Each structure stands twice: as structure tokens, then as C-alpha cells.
Image (tube, rainbow, N blue to C red; front, top):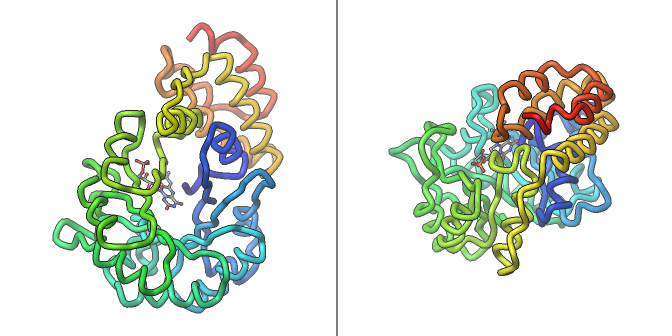
Length: 304
Ligand SMILES: Cc1cc2nc3c(=O)[nH]c(=O)nc-3n(C[C@H](O)[C@H](O)[C@H](O)COP(=O)(O)O)c2cc1C
């Protein structure tokens, strides 16, 4: 997830049981120019086994070169984004705009699959809009082009993040293809995880539900294993996780840039705690790692 799933955040998710992690989406065009910021998004950790890098773009040969860079960097899979609804991306024909051009979408996948030995996977949405919910047909086409797994966010591009993800449609994608389908959208707890798993998907992709709550992966893992569900961490434990995240993000990006990212990431840790509005306001003003440490050690988390 752009702006969120940096290496430090993925480390926390992995620690709690996420089995496959994916980078933020990276521009295929910027990668071929060796753009420093884009390459930074391709940092990965030794414990990330397996880890995928996600790219976006619309030119098959540019995507093929980006896939090679991803492979050279040691990633285990390269994922093509066909889900992003943001006009900055769709305006250039990338992200969810590819849903409207199945032939080009298939060419992109075929070019990538022909360029690398690692699996090429794709992230799609239900379709462009209500009249064009073409995920099952598109998925079949992408499978024929060489995709080895497909993640489906059960909303259309038109919906962006409104309404509910359509698990029934995701189930139809499962029936349409022979490759693994990973279901995505609105998994926030054990109940929603159960509902999406009932559609027959091979796995769950969890986005917003795990922001500030990386332990959700451990709870769902336990659900799948039939093991006792771990408790939600205490505020003190959340504070320790937050410090670990802050240190990791600042190590990656430097303190100035890192703390800009941490303002948002840290506020996510206090979405549901009592007094969270005040805590979140403090998070949004954080300037330094020592400020974050002072907040964590001040006891104000406990008072909240
Ligand atoms: C801030 C933000 C950034 C996102 N960035 C990406 C991205 O880089 N790549 C991607 O495939 N999806 C991205 N998404 C979409 C999510 O991966 C996911 O498909 C969507 O939020 C629905 O799943 P959820 O209900 O589990 O969050 C992003 C979503 C948000 C809110």
C-alpha cells in the first residue's frame, strides 16, 4: 500500500504471521531510469520469504524491464497493479484503467512473464464500473497471458473505497481460473476473514484492516490453524511496536522524511483506543524519533 507498506511496516506484519508481503507500488517508468526514491521502495529484508514487489505502468516493454529489475533485486514475485483508482495513475492508462483494456492488460502480463523466471501476479478490481464488472473474464485472460496468481479487490474503480467489497464476485473469479485467487477488501476481523474465505479463495490480502494493527495477521493465522486467538496487545505493547516501527522507518528514510511517514502510521495505532482523537492529534505533530519515544514513555498512552 502506497505510503504505508515500507520495509519496516512489513517486518511487523511478518512478525505477526503475514505469509507474503508486497512493497508499495513502484513506477515501472521511474525504475528504468534508476530513480533513487523508487529504488528505495524496493528495499527488502532477509526475513521476507517470500516477498513480492508491485509495479504499475502501461507499456509492456517498460514493465518487462521493471520486472527484470525486481527479479535482479531478489524478489520472489512481481505483481502488476490494475487496481489503483487514483487519477494520477489512471490518467496515464495504468492502475485500474487497464481493466478497461483487457488486450493491453494481457500484453503487459505476457511481456513481464516472458522477461523473468519469477512468478508474475496481478492485482485487479471487480471491474471499472457497475456496468463493467469484468473481473472473471479478465482474470481468465490474464491467466492465459502467464499470470500465476490474481488478487481481486471486490470493488469497482468507480466505487473507489465506498460500499462493500463483493465477495460473491470474487468467488466467481475463483471458479473462472485455475491459478490461486487471493481475495481482498474489507477484512478487518475474524468474521470478515471467515466470510471472504468462504468464497473459495486461496488466501486473503489485508490492507486497511491491518494499518496500525499488524497483529491482525496473527489472529487470522490462529483462526486458520484452529489455535487460540491471541489477545489484542496492551497499550504498552502497542507503544513498543510503534517504537520499533519508528526506528525502522527512520533508518530507511532518515529521520526528517521518516517522521513525516510516521505521523500517519503512528496515528493508525490509536484508531480504536479510548481517547484516541487526542493521541492521534499528538501523532500528527511528531517531529522526531525522540518525540515519539517521549510519547511512548510518557504514560499518556496508558491514560488514554
Ligand atoms: C492509502 C492506500 C494506499 C494503497 N496503495 C496500494 C498499492 O500501492 N497497491 C495496491 O495494490 N493497492 C493499494 N491500495 C489498495 C489496497 O491494497 C486494498 O486493495 C484496498 O484498500 C481494499 O482492501 P482493504 O479493505 O483490506 O483495505 C491502497 C489503499 C490505500 C487506502
